[in-house]
Image (cartoon, rainbow, N blue to C red; front, side):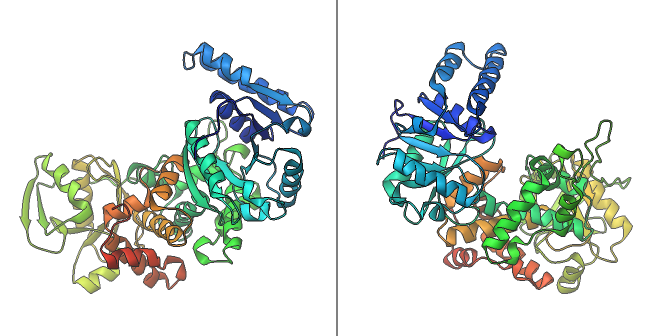
Length: 505
């Protein structure tokens, strides 16, 4: 289906940050836009705010003056909802209340023409439920933008049970014409992003609760090893703990208390205390004036390392070998089970087992486990843990080796899957389950996570890169360690493994 013609009128209801942002996007795409809010003067104030923002961009040379003028000419405040009757697309961005939205859409259905598309920007409510009381629910679709709408590329086009395929296709094409990256999603709790992203927060929160490392260290590993823009604690402080905790609770309840989505008591305590993050001045970090930001814990070593023994295929660790070769280290290669030996230390990538468990089961001594990195060839920090009884000399030698090639080392308490690895494995697991349940395609899931929350790689593409067998093994080991269904490997992962297929073949 083609996109809406740029002459088609777009109406946006709700002049808050999201509504104003959506109105700006549509206006910049050339549509006449009517912005309505039931608060007197709110729409006009929002348009004035857009004007000021775009004028500053013109002054800084980031926006052409004619583009600014064209956008502002397309924006018009509506004083009454009746003025939206000639719209071809109405996008609602009001309070997240099911009945309030239902009442609004019933009113719009009687007001607008029969071919007008009704869209909701809801991030959490069921499109099926929103459309249930309409005479023609097939005209209803989700059009979920991400904040700030003019900047964030993703739009989730959400199909309710009754949504007409031609309607959702038109909305998808229209979002693309507006310069966005649209994805199709079925109307299930959290859609794609708010569902698949839950483990990103949950695993760091659990590691903190278990004393594996502090906030700054866990955040540093997700950034400097995992390649994420922000760690989980930084990000929840930015989002606001009241908002992030509420979304987690909503998804948890919607999935009938599935323990994969269990909320964190640590985050609940912050919400109860009013420590909501940046907006309150305090969350996991202190944002008061003059407060010092804690840094990731970093180990130092004075040990000398000149020779590294490489045993067998290193798998995902292979880029580390190329990096070692660039730093005048003597490399000896021989058969083995995928290990690095330096002095007394034995280094291996985590497979989801405790280091102390692996020592017993694999008959190794002085075992030190490495966390996952997005790219071992360029990572600036890695997490390490080691088995009980590992000598200090072995630890110093491992730290010295990594320091020599420009990698800072953060210690982690011996824990299954360490930090980045278990986070990525759980993200991939949730993404696989979303694909299994028909929420979205593998391609759309990965696109949504990259365009919607700036992940450095889509979770399913990451599973392909690590190896689906390796990811499944990590999850199975996590489940065995905790004895919890939370870590159960998705049937889709097992199916892909059994069929010998990747997610993006």
